[in-house]
Image 1: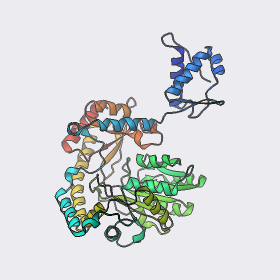
Image 2: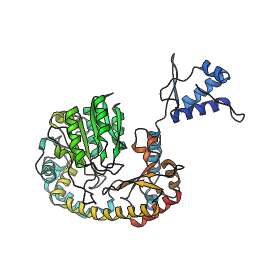
Image 3: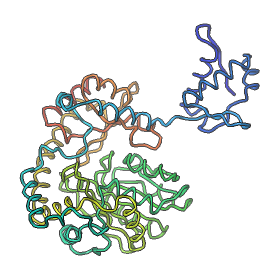
Image 4: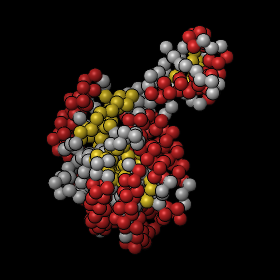
Length: 463
């Protein structure tokens, strides 16, 4: 029952609307819960019916309630994450290049274009155009440029995967989207790590799936919790980032990889392995071995983006799909965009074949390892008792948890924004955004060591 003592300073309907809104946001009134009837509420609060009607109307206008003809008024919890994402993206749209030079941008998660060997890239483009002419600009086989797929098979998989199971896509995000369109229908169960990549959450929400979260441990997802979910639900897919999970930075242990494959076989679901930035391993104790290498029963859908280590604006990646799903995923690809850029596929193929890829990756690894060590040292020295975090040992970001009870990452984001320092609040990575209020991600791909130290110092002032 709603209980409220009114003051004499505001209209009663405003006080009532604000009170109900707070109850909804705090979870005291559940999302979708039916609110008391107008007569019930007017009698219990000893106010006239017009006050309740105006309060409910205000809640509807602000998106906190929905009225259904003949059924009543129901609570509606606003999509906290979506609202903040809109604000977040609009902030960066307003920044032009001059502004970006003045900011300390800890939001980046792609490699800096300043480090890309553009002259080598230009020479490869010219060579492809001279070699292939107009052929380089026409649509390819819907699987992708065959020579590129052959190069991927040889260079990255030592001929241990089937050529026809390799599909070229326009980045990892498209790969996830194709899986959503092929595998997941409304009300199907999908399991994700908690926290997880916001782009994957968007795809699964768009498919109207039932999304279930499993907590992370230091060596990857909690498999005991995952199996409890598998026993109770007919799960279609589990989405995981096997290396340097975005945002937590955690890498899945070899032991858990093996167990996960066993669970997929036992409970008949697919593991969607997003191989995120495994090129950038700084800790030599981390062994590179994707879950896909353990896949004997065709339960793993492997996704790899080239955009993170190649030029970010050139959307290229690939998938290795199980035989059973091959035709349906290929059809979804054709229906989505027919074919990924023919020219860029040919350029990437030659870029890998000439060993420029390996050379560029080694160069990036050297630069980013220095930045990684710089940011870890700065956090320990400046934020030591103010945050906790996992040492990722690779990739381009760290995920920090705020210890101060009086600070959350949204408030910190807004304070830092005034100082031209930008972070990514944790609300972006949780199904319920509020679960991420004590976390924030900082990326170091766009900042050198001097800016890292300056930015961490400013964060320290506010924490």
